[in-house]
Structures are given as structure tokens and as C-alpha cells.
Length: 376
Image (cartoon, rainbow, N blue to C red; front, side):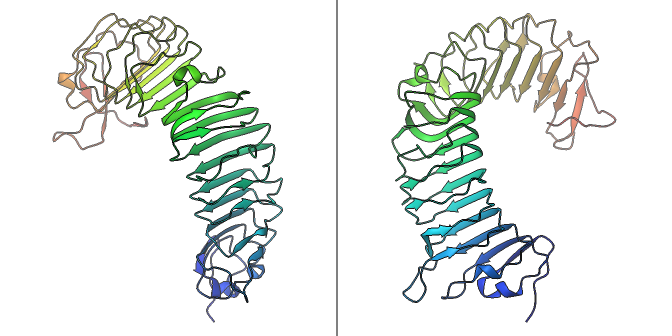
């Protein structure tokens, strides 16, 4: 029988498990027999195991409860043959369950660092996770209502996406690095809200009480696809990113340090006096006025409608302009005199190859640099 030799990755039917080379490190198994495969035949070098199995257990094939104890990364896809008594490897660090029919997830080892759950629509209960984890991602697990299983102390990134109309969180870790909610309609936070040390990202999701219901520990807020015309921007924010939002920026937080607007049709209000960084991408702005003197970084991306500016700060140390259709249509920027300024323009047209970069001097004359190392 032919053996599969691979120093890293092997994909094969389950009936070929005995043929795997001892050098294999990553294995993707697809079920091709009615009988349950014996995963104990996997060689010990295998650290990453992906099992794609749509077969149901039968009377002569009870649910699978054993997996190799030396696997540290496991992905189960569908996997109806795995019962609730499944013994997870004791050294498991990464676990991904995709469209699995498990109703209960128990016996997770203390070594677990990253957990991905996607489309597990029947999952109701998860026993407690380790107190500190790097990642927890939950997508479309509609039956899951109790979140008290989340790490007690800290999780570096927590992401929840669900099509349910209301997401009611009865628990959050004491400390969260990045907190992401997608398609959650409305979110109800628990009475005791954790400390968000990184950023809070809301995609088509809003707290039940609007932006006024945000945790007070949030300093970096990233919003996408929201109607914010009647919302008041919280004053405790230091960094804010708005993408494809409808809003009226009549008043921004006084202590805001960075502001990023992407594909937003908005009339810029008076910018905060402490603003240090401003990024505008595909924003309908024809004039740049009232930029604060504290501004040190300015990025203008695909602003074809910009025709004039007034009162550019003298303290700017980083300027990047990109995706401008024609440099001749862009206003002259005679204040760009410092050699330290990073001012890059890309031009897509018949004269130049698409994607080439050009450094633009203080008179806005495009010239090709000898080498281009700056990322777009």
C-alpha cells in the first residue's frame, strides 16, 4: 500500500490512516468508511488534526470518545459521531468546532488557549473555560444563551457574532483585550462590566441604550454599518474609527486623540484640540479647515473631491496621500518642506502602471523614487 510522505501537511481519507508517514505534523481526515476510524493509529509527531466527518453513530459503532492525547490543535467539522463524553487531548491549545451537533461541550483541558465555535446551532451548554485565554470566537451558535463559561480573568480577544435580535450577556471576563460584536442588533451588557484594555468593535450592532450604554473602560471604539445620526459620542473615548456609518459629527469628545473615517459621508465638525492623528478614506470632504495644531499625522486616501485647505498645522510630521486619480487635480501643498515627511501618492491610470508609488515633493510634482519600501 502506498504511504503518504509529507514533512508538514497530509489530507487523506480515514481508511488511509495507517499509511501516514511518521514525519507528518498536520493531518486533515475525511470520513470514507461506515466504521469509525481508529485515531489512535496517528503517529506522535502529528500536532494538528482536522476531522471532517458527516457520519452518524450506529448500534455497532458507538460515539467516538477517544482522540490522540498528543494533539495540540483540533478542528471538528460536522462530526455527529463524536459524543458528549469525548475526551479532548490533555495538551490541547487550539479547538475549532464547525457546524457540530454537540449540545454540550465539557471536559476542556486547562491548556486550551484558543476556541472557535461556528454554526453549532444546537450547542446549549459549555463548561467553564480556563481563566486566561488568548481567543474566544463564537459565530451563529443561536441556542447558546449562558455566557458564564467565558474565562474569569482575561481573554485577549473575544468575538461574538449572531443573527439573534438581542444579545444578552450575563457575564464577561474581568479583563478583555479586544471585544468584537457583529450582527447582534442590540447588546445588553452585564451589571458588572469588564475592563476593555484594547478596543471595542461593533459591526451592525449597538448596545441596548445606544452609545450611552458603552462600558466606561472603552477608550478605542470602532464602529461599522451603523446609523448614528441621533447618537451622542461618549466623552471618555480617546480613539475612534467609523466605517460606512450614517452620523452627524456635531461634537466630538474633547480628549479624542485619533479619528479615522472610512466611506462616511459627513461634514466635519470642529475637531478636538488634542487630536494627534486624522485619517480620511473615501470621505466626501471638499475642504480641510480647522485642523488642530496638535495634529502630527494626516492620511488622505481616495479623496478625489478635495479641492482646498486652510490652516494646515505646522507640527505635522507624517503625511500620506494615496489613491489620487490625478496629482494635478490635488491642491498644492507648499507647506510640505520637511524631508522627514512621508508623503506618498499612488496613481492608477494609463500613464503609469497600476499600483506604482510616487513620492510627491512640496510642489506636488510626482516623481518615481529610486526604491519604494513604504506599504500602501
